[in-house]
Amino acid sequence: MALTSKTTDTTQIITVHSDRIDAAMAIQFKEDMRNEADGGAPRVVLDLTGVEFIDSSGLGAIVASMKQLGSDRRLDLAGLHPFVEKVFRLTRMDTVFNLYQTLDDAIARSAE
Image 1 (cartoon, rainbow, N blue to C red):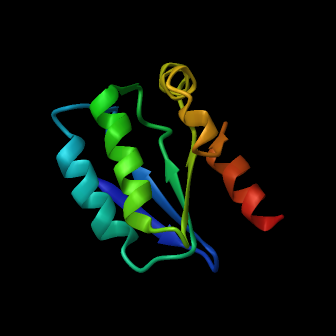
Image 2 (cartoon, rainbow, N blue to C red; image 1 turned 30 degrees about the vertical axis):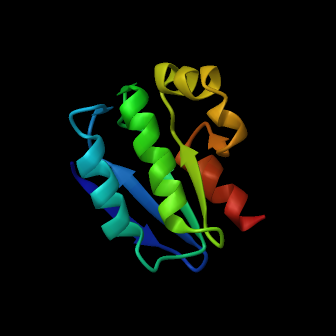
């Protein structure tokens, strides 16, 4: 799975370059997230703009990635396709993560 990241003063943006996060990719996703987010900014925004499908394993991988960040860092999600957003809302994970319609919305939030 390909992830890229860039960091501003207080926010690290990690972009997922895959159209799905599912059981076949979950373990690799967690490892790639650990590598990308290691020692980064206090806020991490996961850009899911290209992700069109997520299953329970993918959801679990994102939750595990949040836990790997520790209690002093935050993981927010941006650019969720309608199906992916529906999975987060149905599982009530929208109460755990801040969900932003677009990456620009998430970045604007960090400027507040």
